[in-house]
Image 1 (tube, rainbow, N blue to C red):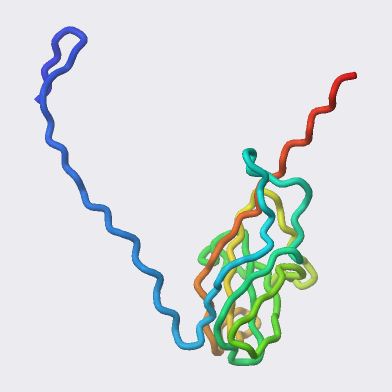
Image 2 (image 1 turned 180 degrees about the vertical axis):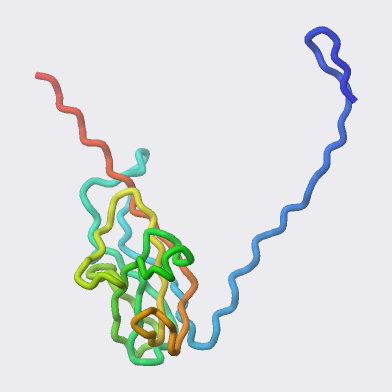
Length: 169
C-alpha cells in the first residue's frame, strides 16, 4: 500500500524475487570434435581509449584448437554474423588447414568466401568475428558428409583511434 501526502509517498510493498537460472556449462565435445582453445596476436587496444592505430591483418592473429581431423585437414570458418544466421546462405569465409595432429593452429589470413571464390576476408576495425573449426568433409552446398564443427568462439577487432588533431601554428 502506498499513501501520498503532499510531495511524499509512504507505505510498504512486497518484493518478489524471481530466480535467474545459471548459465549452462559448455557441452562436452563429441569424440574428435575440434575445440577452439584461444587466439594469439589479436591487436591490443591502447588504454584508456580502447582503440588501435592502423589496419589489422589476419596473418598476425592465430587461432589455436585441438581435435582430430578425419580427412587430414580442417576447415576454419569466419563470419561477421553468427553462423546460425549465415549457414544456409553460405555467407562466410573459410580456409583449409592441412593437419593430421591433435593440436593445430592457423593464422587468420587468406580466407576465401564460401560461395564467392576469389573474394577474400578483410578484417575491419570495430567488428566482432565468429570462428569455428570443422574436421570433416561437406558437399559443395555445405551439407556435411562426415565430421563435426567446433563450438563457435568470437573475437573483436578494436575500433580505430581518432587521428590526432593538427596543432595550430
